[in-house]
Image 1 (spheres, rainbow, N blue to C red):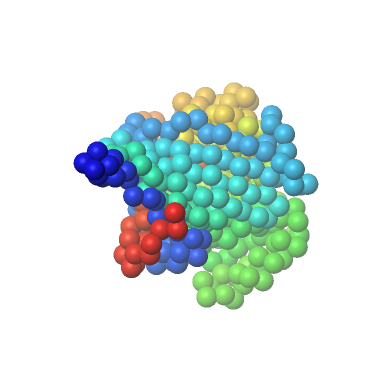
Image 2 (cartoon, rainbow, N blue to C red; image 1 turned 60 degrees about the horizontal axis):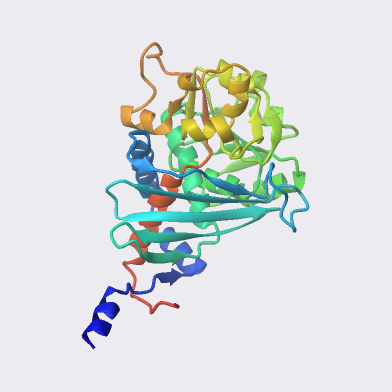
Length: 346
């Protein structure tokens, strides 16, 4: 009996399983500023070498084969994991999607007992939020104070989350939309225009027309060849390049990074392999010239060395770093813990 009791005491309780509805309700109670602050701390910790991040697994994209149901070639699943040294949890996340459908889940484990603490069946929501928060953080540091308008290239799910986060860091509400699928641009314009956030949205006849004169250029596509041309970018402008997150993807001409006053990356190591930086490096750009977002946050902006004045053409290359998943999961669990406990489904 004593041995059985000892074994029972050593067995960790089952993880809490939270539905997509529960996760969405919890994050709906978290202010955008709280998400931005948590992500800023995560990026800073990452750039200071206090985060362990294994290599990303990317499924469904070259050189691997397509998923069975991927008729459009944009299906993808990313498996990312990380932990902050000295923290309480480690996280493994699967985010999958394609053809306008997104899904996923987040697994949260204890760093102390190594046991699973929670299964967040978020349907990809946490990934959408943390990706959008990275763009907004870059815009908060580098966007003009009063942008003429925001150009949005690509009008899928992530474009909506990006605009939602950008609303917290810029007063600009004028948006010009362009998509290779015109019906997506029209749908997003109808959704945004005159809505509670105050957006004034219009569909641009071309990507160039959307980008010309924009103070913020947001690219959120699965493109594998450049859409945005360097000549379309008029200073001052920040380009938030979100879509390129695996080998071969590309939304910007390499010249946009080469001619930029400042290139900011979420992870120098990742962007060289998976982001816009891969193409710029192939064209002769020195990756050591790129600054990590965490470095910029820690220093309060851009200033370092030979470029003390405010940069007027900034490119932010975002591939998604797993510390973002750690921080958004911590926020979500903290909010969920404030609600009455429900017995685990396991």
